[in-house]
Image (tube, rainbow, N blue to C red; front, side, top):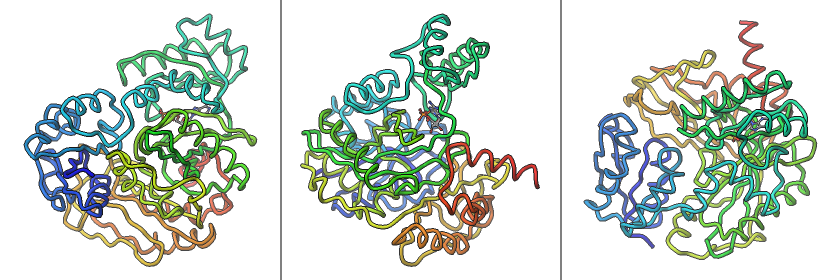
Length: 450
Ligand code: ADP
């Protein structure tokens, strides 16, 4: 096992990793920007190092500063969390060169999955079903037209380097296609410095369903069921739940086993998530995230497995301590991402938290790094915390979520708590009857009726 883990992140995920490390008896190092000197992860870590000014480029993304922090403190492993450097293969390699372990997959797997065109090719080779589309990148308009005619309109132009829903454009007819191509290319170039794009069939009413996996890099890998993350705003997940209200046991087993087998063949190391769109009983691979995800607690609540603890153990060379037969899905869990944003216009609302009272009780978990008197800095994402609720079934879970949301008080800033209080009472949400466009449409309609 590692002796000292440096956590190259901030906010709730830094705290989450710190908790797992402490329970493993491993010492922890927090790093922080000057804007985060008062952050909870800094207060709770055994040691802390300031790695730069507020701008993430100069601090949390500053590889030389992170390596120096490891050397000063003698950390022998780095946990990157999510975002920042978590899917940066180069960072993993630089750490390796300095004899510091990267708590994450092998660099080659990060690289393949970071390029969506390569990822799709790999998925197809491993027997994972994909969205019909171009075999590789699209370089000219004529080729795009041929592919689009083949798969049928509407089509979606997507950035190979994509992330966060950027560089994505729909073309409903041939007349839209060349515009969609050039604007997707432009957006991809400015967001990722890479203008490679590809084409996919645009699915009209899919759900977003993703499979959690873990492997030990030696060919042992299992799936831990799915999460349904269809409730999204601007391609960002807002509410995640597991199991998906849309799947039955047989469908779950089938897609889960396909993914687990693919991860065994790949000799995948660490935790990961294989993301699908699901429409008319068919799964279509869209991407794989090679890191711990924001919504991982949903899976922890229904499997009883501490994913970060297991992630650290396999990174340290451990053999996966369970087989597929050991994984049991128990009850239902829902996560709400509570943001420091206005609940209807979503304007960011950083600032001083004057009062903070999280809910509690059986089956209720709040993963948050804020506290009363904490000032949310304006430089980073707007996550205040995640409320995760477990019940023996979906109905119990929804009732528990409703009462937990009613207990939750955050004063001093705007939060999206009122949005969740509305959602948890909405008939479509209660019925589990929603697709990836449901929330956007709901927000549009409620803005009109306000
Ligand atoms: P990113 O990495 O930018 O988040 P993804 O490929 O994961 O991109 O897609 C993000 C979201 O975009 C999906 O959750 C879904 O809402 C939408 N999307 C992606 N591909 C398609 C498609 N082929 N048809 C319809 N919607 C799609």
